[in-house]
Amino acid sequence: MPVGTPVAGVFLEIHGGGFYMGSAAGSDVRNRRLAEALGVAVVSVDYRLAPEHPWPSAPDDCETAALWLVEHAESRFGTAKLAIGGFSAGATLAVSTLVRLRDRGVTAFNGGVLQFGTYDLAAKTPAGRRIADEYFLDAYAGTAPDRTHPDLSPLFAELAGLPPIMIVIGSEDILLEDNLAMARRLSDAGVEVDLRVFPDSPHGFTGHATPMARAALEHIDAWLRVQLGPAG
Image (cartoon, rainbow, N blue to C red; front, top):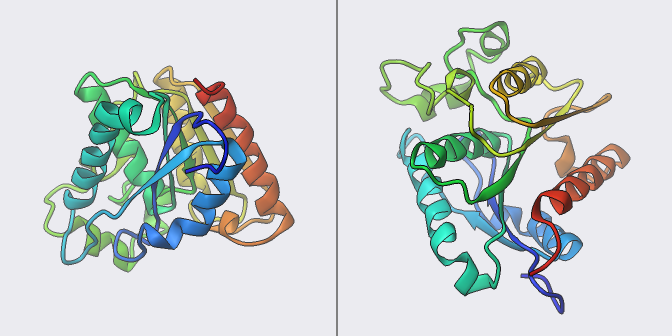
């Protein structure tokens, strides 16, 4: 929660870690910075991790948290203004969550910030094939018969009707092409997309204390202020 200021909105944060590592607590420093910078409450999801809990456990948990916020944000935090975002695997889960909510007819989220997610877990695109031998793919997908399932690989989802999306990616990230492809798919679906590519930056760069990371975080803060609007 922000200290000494009204809550301007609630940000649902989904941590990274390749679907098999990480925790909500691991995002505490970043989330505290965001809470103070924007005057928002930040709720982080401790979703179940692979390989013990393969897909769809993680998106099930994220959807449950999102639906709880839709129902309780106003009474708990004093605002119904919601946004969602994630870091690496968390960005993938953020998109899956927004698609699930849209399919339920839930349009309560005003925007999503996706930091260097992975969107083709099926190795069907050139970008997806670049990470085809990564451990997290097998750990997360488990025994899923078709990894192009849109809930697993959001690049293949029907994306129309999602709220505005900001995509942040580094030019040296192995997932750059994947993120460019997702930006195109979103734009083609009529979704408002703000794509920011930061030079000379690798995967996960916003988690480090560098000038480029600070610049990226400033862009994210400014974008979220617009989506959430003034306190009230």
